[in-house]
Length: 325
Ligand code: SF4
Image 1: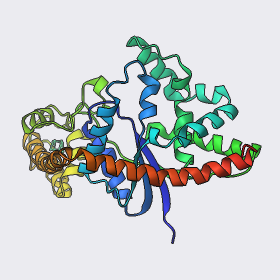
Image 2 (image 1 turned 30 degrees about the horizontal axis):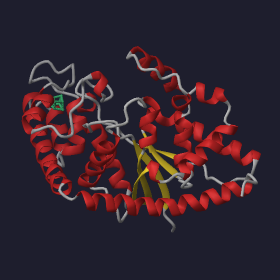
Image 3 (image 1 turned 180 degrees about the vertical axis):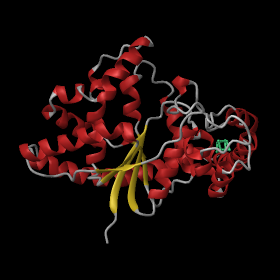
């Protein structure tokens, strides 16, 4: 059976945190079941931060190192930088001609983020910012992806992509499949909310053991469990959400929590130990790779070449059905 194709991307917008690491873990698992295309979407980073572009090359390099050291395999997956495949811009432009403004304006995250970034003093009332989900649509459909790993809050973006695909098919000809979501669980921040630097609840990916242990100690637990002798509910505990990712003996821990045979302090200690060990391996691989910048460039160039071949074929088809060839 032919494998389906997945596209996903991440903005090189600064330092990685454990929430990003979890997204990566999901991507890594998908590598065996799908043909995966993963992009460092540098143009997306400009949609909300276009004034100072001096950090972009360094951030791209950082992100590529994070991805590879975590376990993305450039032989199994296509790994590349979005701006190295110019077809993304061409398709974005063509889609922008036929997408009603109201479709973009009603994306739930648009107004919230506009307000949030405006409050931070950013001049963000731009076409690029409004057109962010349009560019995302171009990214996905350029590769005719059948599926996209997404978090719950990104579902409206994917629904918009599907609407744009249907409009394109009605106006010209069906060229693109409608991608399905693959819901990916996310790691919460230490306070139980979505992990985000703006909430100050993140655990940095590069955290040293002391910092990691300190952040784990601050994690909220089952609020009903006041005394060590109270049975706990791991399903509503942030610490346990992390155990599910880092501890192979997660079922045992859940049992101990439910029958109150482990206290939260010890439970957190066990988690911190697992995280320190896992991250020590990843950080070690990252250190080795960071000493080989040419190899990194080679991997990204190889990925861009493979991505470009698929993108060029799609664009030939698009131009033909739009009478632009
Ligand atoms: Fe959470 Fe562990 Fe405490 Fe249970 S024992 S509430 S899983 S920290």
